[in-house]
Image (cartoon, rainbow, N blue to C red; front, top):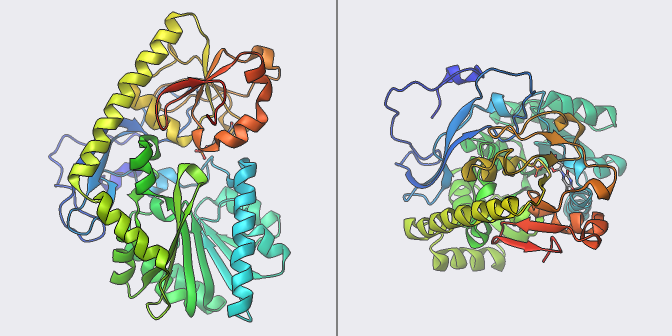
Amino acid sequence: MIMDDARDPNYRPSKMAKRPPKCRICDAGLHTVLDLGRQPRADAFRSPDDSTPEYMFDLQLGLCESCGAVQLVDEVPAELMFNASYPFRTSTSQRMQRHFRDTAMSLLKSEVHTHTKPFMVEFGCNDGTFLTPLAEAGVAHLGVDPAANLVAEAVSRGINAQSGWFNADTASSILSAHRSATVIYAANTLCHISDLASVFVGVDVLLAKDGCFVFEDPYLGDIVEIGAFDQIYDEHIHYFTATSIDVIARKHGLALIDAQPLDTHGGQLRYTVARPHQKRTKAVEALLETERRMELHSRARLGHFASVVESRREELTSTLEALSNDGKRIAGYAATAKSATVLNYCGIDSALLSVIYDTTPEKHGRLAPGTGIPIEPFPTSVDDYPDIFLLLAWNHAREIAAREPEFAARGGMWLQYIPGVKLTKDPVA
Ligand code: TMP
């Protein structure tokens, strides 16, 4: 684990021998099952004038054979990743806006049956996309997020939100300032938090007796199934399964009572954790059995995943080189966080990929972390598009296909690498 001095962006880990890595859940030894090499922070888009050395760390996936948890071996201090310059906005994707509106409304619908006075708390609330429909419906709610810039944005739109980390202290202060939460919700947040015990203790403090803790995160089963190695980056410290969540929940007097697959972000699960007196669904039992059958928590299964990842790298780089030698102009589609992993692991730099186009204004004029590929706004005319787009936002392929019909119409092609390397006319194919 990186030491405290790592809060300084110029900090370089010393050459001193590291302690053997330990599981963040049960403290047993971790086995490294996949090594993605030296990597930058995935969201650290650099100014071209910045000549300071880039913060780099070893991106390795570890397995705890004792409790089944899969997690990063090394980690970047949270303050370096989630602060007032955090560039990700939930609202950038229209599909995700719809997803969070639907989720909020369906949770509220079941709340209305169970609680006369719902109080819904979201941690990692980002720009308030999930809480907006609840605020509009006049439901008591509170958002918590360490990114003060995003919290300020949410507050200016009438959302109740405060900046900070969710843990036992925050939970106690919310409890005394408000009341117990009937729903605690988090999307793409729990897997970012190194110290899960601090969150689960907080949930136990704040959750009403018959309340639910509902959260969504990338699912290890899907990552392994489709070889989605680019889901592995600094911000994703944990790679959950139904099995591992049930273990953690039980350690804190809670239990996994439901788990539903989602097709967001390339394959996620929506977990529902509650006090153990609440009834567990058949879906959980089925999933636990599937994970046992898949041997998802074994060195053998994850070792096979690592060999798939290695051959994917060979195939992607040789395809890109061949296309480039053929005189094709290739650009990246969307400077996603996950693109840092694939570009750095495969050694793809501006010689192979001259530019990455992206819709986020804060990323324009900046350089992609590690590789230094320039990020620009999309050309206003499709005539200025490249011959081929490397589909870095593959998890948004349907939305992108709907937005870019003209690109295919004029002969443009998509280079995909998840679930395999292929060149297609349609990004969804
Ligand atoms: P993320 O995958 O790390 O959440 O980042 C999404 C980035 O992708 C964000 O910078 C916006 C960008 N993007 C586009 O540029 N065009 C698109 O069609 C989509 C869906 C995302």
